[in-house]
Amino acid sequence: MIPIPYGKQSINEEDIEAVIAVLKSDWITQGPAIERFERAVAEYCGVNYAIAVSSGTAALHLACLAAGLKEGDILWTSPNTFVASANCALYCGATPNFVDIDPLTYNLSVDELEAKLSTTEAERLPKILMPVHFAGQSCEMERINDLGKKYGLTIIEDACHALGGSYKGHKIGACIYSDMVVFSFHPVKSITTGEGGMIITNNEDLYQRLLRLRTHGITRNPSCIQDESHGPWYYEQVELGFNYRITDIQAALGFSQLQKLDSFIDRRRYLAERYNDLLKDLPLVCPYQHPDASSAYHIYPIRLKLNKVSKSRQQVFNELRESGINVNVHYIPVHTQPYYRELGFKQGTYPKAEQYYKEAISIPLFYTLTEEEQDFVVKAIKEIVR
Image 1: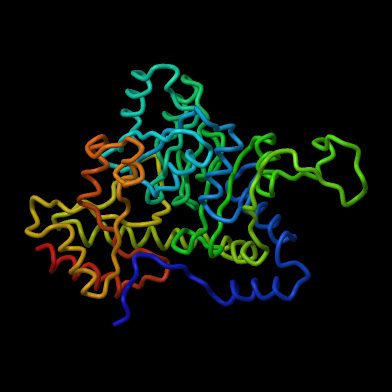
Image 2: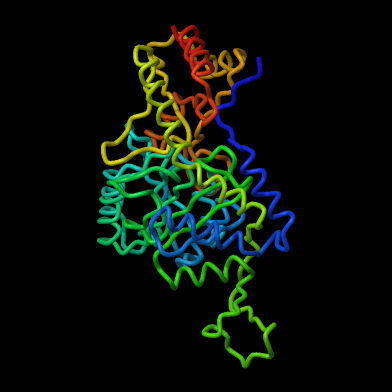
């Protein structure tokens, strides 16, 4: 039997033909396919601007730079995330810090956030708050936005898991409760460009700066040129940027994938509901869905009730892999990583995230997962945990 992965991309002939068309065209990078992809994602989310970049991590970095994050500033995020959500602060010379999670949603806890904001000295408050939509489910953005306004915070949504999800009737990415939203197009995400990311905003000033930062800090915009133009070829570097550009090859794949996004998400939701039903009587916790949110179901993490299971999480994990099911774990809390311990963070600081990590296993969920494969996964879990 071929092992069942926890996640994978879905590529069909239309995607392949879209890429071939670009390869046969005059542009394979910095051409019209990028702008077409950006417009399509912006329209899907209902916002004014979208900037495609080389990865979700690049998108997080540029969003922080565009917001003015610098040395001496602070960014708060969730410890239950991939390290990029915190690393982006370090890239800017700033300091990352964390807010513990809600034990139901596994997202950043708004109650913990409110308490931490109210007890933090003004000079130690964050410049940027980065809530992470873990597993595809939106954080409680309305409450987070209210706190952001009260304390003067810039809010950047790390929605790398969440393209296709919604919150309070709006697409995640609508920028109703934040300044910017970041997506990832890694192969296991809602849609893929191979590697790639995107920043969404309604703020034109942020948009113009993001365009510059994506390409070395270079501009051809006449309103930003400081010296007299030398001719049609003229450009100026007006700040220090990066080569974080995406290619037309990737953008063509992304545009093709975007046409199928809603069907991808519908299938993920169907399979998640089916898991909820098939696993309901086992000694584990299925993902909770907040009534204000509709998850994109990037992953499906179960949480073992270890006091009712005679095996450790590692034993369950190993036995599932031995059964041909390539489960994974999301995430090792960022503050417990050796690099972050060297920065002064300690085990035990964010107990809810740490407890979740001890119990979590991500089981297979992706568009092409069949019901037969899903039944095989469920059967294996039942045999292992009972």
